[in-house]
Amino acid sequence: MRNYGRLWAVLGVSAVALILAFGFGQLKAAQIVITVMGSGLALMMLWDMIQTLRSGKFGIDLLAITAVVATLAVGEYWAAMIVLLMLTGGDALEDFAAHKAKRELKSLLDQAPTKAHRQETSGLNDVQVDDVAVGDILVVKPGEQVPVDGVVIEGESMVNEASLTGESKPIEKGVSAELMSGTINGDVALTMKVTKTAADSQYQGIVRLVKESEAKPARFVRMADRYAVPFTLVAYLIAGVAWWLSGDPVRFAQVLVVASPCPLILAAPIALVSGMSRTSRHGIIVKSGTTLEKLASAKTFAFDKTGTITSGVLHVTQVKPVSPWREDQLLQLAASAEQQSTHILARSLVTALPKTDLLAASDVSEVTGMGVSAKVAQHTVKVGKAKFAGAADPVTGTAVYVNVDGQYAGVIILADHIRPEANATMRQLHTLGAHQLMMISGDQQAIADQIAEEAGIDQVYAEQLPAQKIAVLAAVPAKERPVVMVGDGVNDAPSLATADVGIAMGAHGATAASESADAVILPDDLSKVAEVTIIARDTMVIAREAVLIGIAICTILMLIASFGVIPAIIGAMFQEVVDTVTILYALRARTGRTHIATAMQQQAEN
Image (cartoon, rainbow, N blue to C red):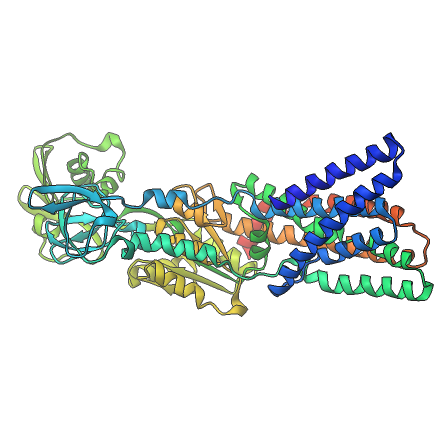
């Protein structure tokens, strides 16, 4: 907002000076107004420059500030006003590009557990989660969020831990099992003993990690800053030599006016804003221009598994009936019996069949923690755990077992499917120059390895909690950075904030992930990661070309001005011509040089 204020101040003072000079003929008053405003603004910018230099960076505005001081010193105040308009306008535009669409993590904080049911001598008492102490006994009702970390002391239920670990299947929790805050209880109440206070529990830890990561952004050198030092040195050299040879300080000001770094101040921000507009048309919201800069040079891509590499929904993969039952019969009986259940595995069974194939079920009863029993087509059908269905030899993985009329009838195996576009996306990223593709998952090692092999992932980190995911990203060496993290859940929020670039799959992902990310993919399409990388690289090529074209024109103008043939005010106007050329070229990033569909097709064929 400070840069916007400076721009409005310059516009206001310029209007006053123009009215004084051309409305009332008060040229001296106009000069005084511009000189006072220009000197004050130059001092403020000089202070900002000192702070920038102290941080180890080089600010390109130094050259423009010198041009303002030089023109004011030799009485070329109209030229100074034009340079100030260019300078403050460029800074305001860069602010807009850098902070576009950046929001806070309000959603994550809103979703944190706030209340708990504490067991006391008088019964259950609702208390604030911050008032819960280690050793307290809490009751977590069906469908509720676990308020703090603890251990189950009574009850047995299926708990959804996807928000923390990313695993799509619910985990069975019985006596002595650990519960993590932020997870969702299933259909049965659990009594737990508190082992950690709210401040030390898993979900609140995620909130804290995200805040810490947001407060410590990765260091990154912008493209404009990389060209700033040589351009500034060349400008000072030409201006100094011109002054020395001519003996006229006005010559120094004339050279610096045409050397004002419009291409560096304007070209990159305009190209980046145009590139961001282009990404939005492809269903990708990029929150800052710096994100595009980092993404264009990304060397490592890391992915969460569930909901990112995979669809995040369990599907029936195998039906293994026992004679005399057939596969279609076993699946139909099981799905029909489960159609009234709200269990996640029941929903997966029901969606495996068209609604018209489901049979009517009666006498439906659900045995807590075991399964469902129902009458279907004059058969007594039991669907659930191996013990419930009488299976002697349970299979490995996620499965439901079926018993028909008192006899074990078979097993139905479920798994999370890899996205159909996942493998092609990995190949495209390799073609784009990605050195390393990683998968960082909270899931089991065997499952993660299998998914990674199908997708074409180079390296796998399994059974990782949020803090461990951050450690994996932090360990990526500097030569393999920038590193991009792609995820979709609350558990991914700290990783997305920690990575050089965080990309959230926003179609079904948690709002917290989208808030923490630098970019959000709105369609449920992983190939958009490759698309946004292509757009970022295309944008940076155009930005670089715009900068170099502007620098080339400025250098030619500086050499001409060194002979004293370009008055300062004419030089400032020439600079506006350079601005126009630079801006028009940078705006090409809105449509780009590369046709995305063609590029994606070519990379898929490679």
